[in-house]
Length: 303
Image 1: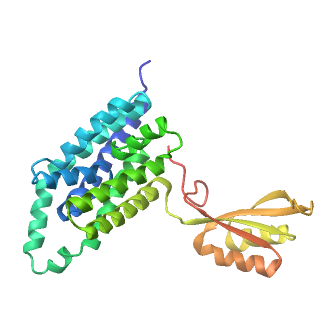
Image 2: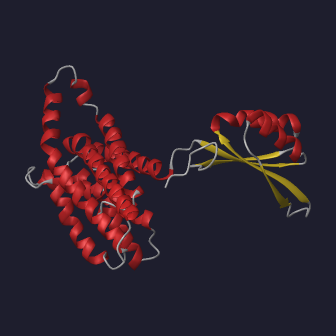
Image 3: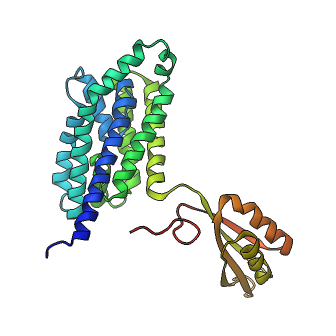
């Protein structure tokens, strides 16, 4: 069956975003990590080690691509066709961008080294590890959000998990990153660089989470109260948020409970607490962090 125009347009848009994500990740690696020997774990970190051990003759991007080829051969049967195509695109994209941007990154770093105004900034490895991890994580988050990965340790973790189900994907990723950091610390003869790499890995994972799940900007509130109508009316009239009434049972006493559910912005939480306190001092309140809310009063649905 011939794909519809809508499907084709959607696919093109997604591939454009994946390409943009790989470019963003490459910028983080080339400009903030590789010049300062901060290995960000995974295949990119291992490729960086090989780059320096070879006297900077073996490109980082092409090394990443070479390391990924065996993974695709092993794991192609365990992942879907669409995922394979997108991941191949992202893997080639990030490898090419890293090697294309490397001369520009080298030029910028030399400029910083020779600039007296930026000499102190140039020596701040903490700054580079944080910014590099954030920029790289933002790029990878975009790639992941549109159904792809850049191969590497992510794909390796999926393969290991398939053959060894007791090892979770997260645990395998941690093991691979830890091994790469140890290798980098030994290769660069610097324990400090290993610690900076750990900071980069942490920031990178947090940036990926933000792009995949959103920022903690909202709260879900559960209120167990004997005065549900009074509190609900006040929340709707004074705070302007909707309230859903739920039916509950106290399992210890067997008595019926009135439960109110309300989702609101973080800044509105103190107002809600005041409303509950003034109307029922014995009410029980549960606050839950929410990554993303779609619907009226928050983020509109997107197609």
